[in-house]
Image 1 (tube, rainbow, N blue to C red):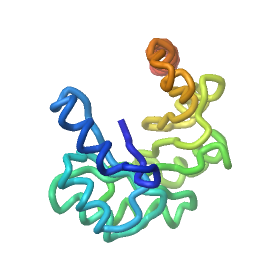
Image 2 (image 1 turned 45 degrees about the vertical axis):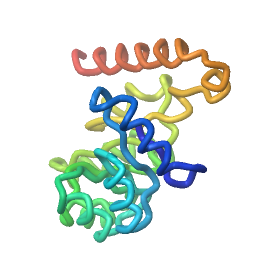
Image 3 (image 1 turned 135 degrees about the vertical axis):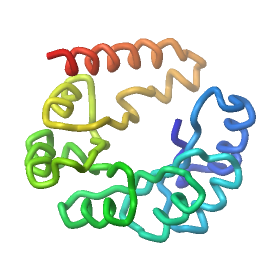
Length: 174
């Protein structure tokens, strides 16, 4: 679960989730904009970092202590800088801006770079992103309905997650 740092009380939420789940779920910090933010989140237990951009200082802050970092990039140049800086995977963001066709084109010139499609991935297009070569996808509102969560209806998240897993499994067998 990624808690974006641009939400109210994000650091407090990260600490509370890490305490509550006590290693049974990976909790990370998203929208990490500086090495200082990265260090604060990791000190509270964040086990991964997600950034909207390619900031070598953020990447190094995580990697220096063994915490994976997923920087956001869109152009081939940004993607290569992130990878060369040590990011194990790169977040293609916003993925729907270029769509699966763009991801496929990037994979042609950078086949060894694991790209994670994030931003606009839905049940309607997730199979296309996997077919285009995405190593993984990031899900937000397509997975979590905030109104349902506010009402304590978590079964909708479970149902959506199962549907995404089914599509993923189908894309790997076809």
